[in-house]
Length: 567
Image (cartoon, rainbow, N blue to C red; front, side, top):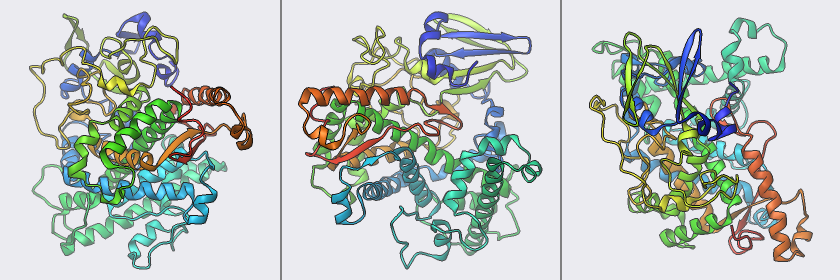
């Protein structure tokens, strides 16, 4: 099968073969499913259907971590990491997201007043890169106590020497890359690092292998230095504000016993490599998935001006046009924000373009397992591989409200369309009852549903952008808060429009009739949708290489298209 085939073909295979089907080869049986009923049963029974950790070995290059392990070792990792993911730290994320989004806007519009006036209508073709920077800056500060800056910003004089080392725009002594560049290159060349042994990397003359080797060494050195700093802090009894994920892992491992003595009262102890491995996975998961969803949400809002206007109306209702976002209060505003059109737009982007297309599981060795589909019992043999297909279940008409023909694909339903108002439609069915053998152990993290009670509540198993069950994404609440804050700040004073430079100059647009503007915008929208459909997965689903959706950020009231296009 081709990689990401389900994102390419959407519901077509499922319409022919059914919501669940088997792929049988001489050496393996694979169950593919887009059935919410099956997905809920499988994710609810972690011991019977553990994660297929071999699919995540790519993310163990700096040490085993909570994503690449199962069983007792996974519980150890989860226990060490989960205390950092709580509502208090979600409030930190909210505030830092506001601050960093303002930095991104200044970067786009120009940091000085004169630059902002000059660049107020400049085309931006770096949205994917910039949302990555935004999300990395947020997780670096709140998760690791490091303040990162946007290009053009000056590092404050009172910034600590440690922070300057990681935030510097020039490589510090002992490194040939900045921390940000080393991480970005590791992520870009991660397949090379996984497939090619270190000794061979040193011998190969190719640009990609040289870049991978240099980035790996720089990033590993940075994290080793950061780990040693955190061990020393633990020895002194010092603590940091925010989530302080690395500090939490160090304290869980070393306690207050000092640099050379680990806690001995735990049956399993986290090694230094595991601490670095978990830090890596949290940095990756904490910025790549969130950044991609934010990027695609902005693209879809530019494609759908009516949805953008509805979002702005809710931002105006909640915060007003003239309030200072730095005065917004998490406790006061978050529940209303989660029930608003801002959340509906985020949820709809997560439904259409999930960061992870397929979630791999398998039947635990040693015993066959049964699931029930439409009242019939089906037995899956031990070691059977299982793929929970996010794209298929997110577009399954059995679980999603649909009442009109698609305007995007021509299908008989509108499930291929970006329609945030879908999240205000009545629920189709009641959620399935809990399974008799569903696990009740507390594995930490946010325990609420993925959507507000005031929005459409999908059937359990039908909306899994953060997976589900005990192995669901630990940071989903953090990610949601970050995206909601960023969207609210952006659209309080600005609109986002597709750039039409390919078809018309600014002077030509200024002289167009409303009908002509609609026609040229439709060309940009067609290309934007085609580009989004070319997204592929390495770690997560995103646009790679030269694939871009250029946009313009314009002050509200100065739009050329958003208020002239009705859809």
